Length: 141
Length: 324
Image 1 (cartoon, helix red, strand yellow):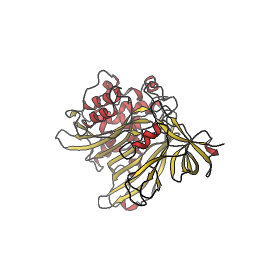
Image 2 (cartoon, chains in turn orange, blue):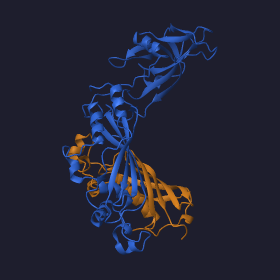
Image 3 (cartoon, rainbow over the protein chains, first blue to last red):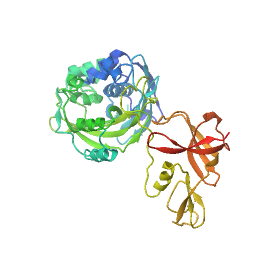
Image 4 (cartoon, chains in turn brown, red):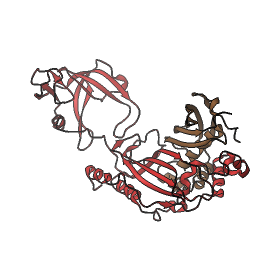
């Protein structure tokens, strides 16, 4: 469940977000792909994924984006407003693995009322995703 | 692979800056059911997406869609699983062109999104996609290929921009030896395995590579002051003379310094390998691989001799081998 929304004034550059392990299950991979309307076969059909050189179905980008957004808004609270996401994709997320999300505050823009968080989601291969998310927060609590 | 690299790259330029087709309307308006299903699948419990009363008292004043769901409203669903049902547009044409030219694999590497406003149930979404940029040929850990950047602009039923997304994909020929980013067993595509990238050859250095092709290791000697220099360049850094001649080196030398390369793994190389700066007996230095010797045995001062060897059917490089 969401925390109360953070206020910009209570944050400092360098503040760490609580780490969040996300288990990569077949259900998450396929459920995420289909809920995002991405029916590209490699995300739901193991045979097709193997034909494309992967061991199993692997997570689609929309699900990665969604999990990144969820991680940051869970921390920032329900009255935070996402302004943008920028991610670099690395190792694939395959069923059976765990992606550990981590993040820290990298910039605070008091004029715009926004905070930027550098995030990383790493699995047993290395970084699945790295990037940044910018959210607007209320100025004071 | 009927196109030469030059022909292919000239054709690629034609796609840059163009919209792939007319704006496309998303098949379904933004709706609560799809939002709930997404939140359920991803475990997102933010109440502004699913709890109408909590959303009403939030900054949004009502239910909104997760902003990262933006592209969902434009995707074609089951149609995407059928290669024959896919829509033809400039983007699919570009991918086919690269696929036919020997770069069949594709992987997304970057995604950026900006949100002008949150979408709400009832919004209709229209997407325009532009091919923003195509890179020059790149060697990556996955293989050799081209990066393609596209930009999508999302508009609502009023024609107002609600957000944008840029996407960067690599369209590539898979390397024989997959890099760290690819799990085991990734290399069963039949595409031709690239060898090493060719060095750029032009007026100032082609004569040196022509020497290598003939099996001769040349060094540039200034006709003004007699200083040697390498790699080839037009002017002497000592006397600024533009006059020079190529002399044949004996090939004898010793390791002046070296590194052992483990990562990142580029196609065309066997890892680990030794990359050395070799001081030639004639006095100038040259970068080349030391082969015929375990990388752990290479050391500064090691005596080596040049050996010009084929790296594939058409291309030779100078290597250095230890003198026992």
